[in-house]
Structure formats: structure tokens, C-alpha cells
Length: 166
Image (tube, rainbow, N blue to C red; front, side, top):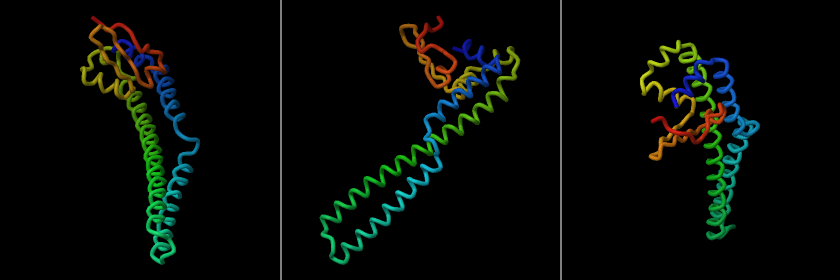
């Protein structure tokens, strides 16, 4: 695994291109305009609050039965949960994109410029940090196979199944 990553890191131009592809893959998962979509979901939450108050006023004035109020409020609660899930997903996506950008800069600044000898002397913990920053995960199976996955693993053509080193 380290040999694959070492080869990637020692070619800064290829590394930059692969990191950009990884970030683009994450960007593709975002909606067209995250700010506009966030505003729309926040407006939906405000609308739910207004409708809730309206239903409660109708019920307080006796113009709506209690069972009707319960049903209407249950529907609004479902709409609120959906809006909150969507907002959370948008925030998570944007946070991951920000992390990828920061990690790209850190990798290019810290590791891509290192001499090959210095890279070879990285401790296992430092190598693991590089794997995390590159979003590469590897699992060595009992049968000797190595499963490699992650956004950059696909971007650089690392196969998902290979033979683990002996």
C-alpha cells in the first residue's frame, strides 16, 4: 500500500491532478447551488413555524378540533424533520469539501516536496495520517488479499482487490 502512495506523492503534478479529481467528485455530490438550497430549506422551516402557530390559534379559538390539530402538527413535524435532515446533509457535504481542500493543501505543502528518503522514513502513524488525508482505506484480509477503497483510490486507479504483502 505504501509503495502505491509513495509513487503518488513523489509525482507532485500527478498528485495535484488526482487531488483535484477527488475534490471534484465531492463537489459533484453537492447540489447546484448549496447556498440557494440552504435558504430554501431555512424558509421551509420558517413556514412550518408559521403554520404551526396558525393551527394552534385556530384550535385555541375552537375553529379546529383537537384531533385535526394533532394530525396537522404531525405533518408539520415530518416536514420539519425532512428540512433539518437536508440542512444537515448540506452542511456535512460542505464541511467534507472544506476538509478535502485543506488536506489537499497540507499534502502538497508537507509531503509532495519531501525528498524520497524523508518519505521512506515516515513512521507508520505518519503514513496512516497521509492515507487519511488522501481518503484511502485499506483492509488486509486473512486470506492475504488487500482491499483498498476511498475517493482517491478510485481517482488514481488503485484496484480494490489485490494481494497483501507477505
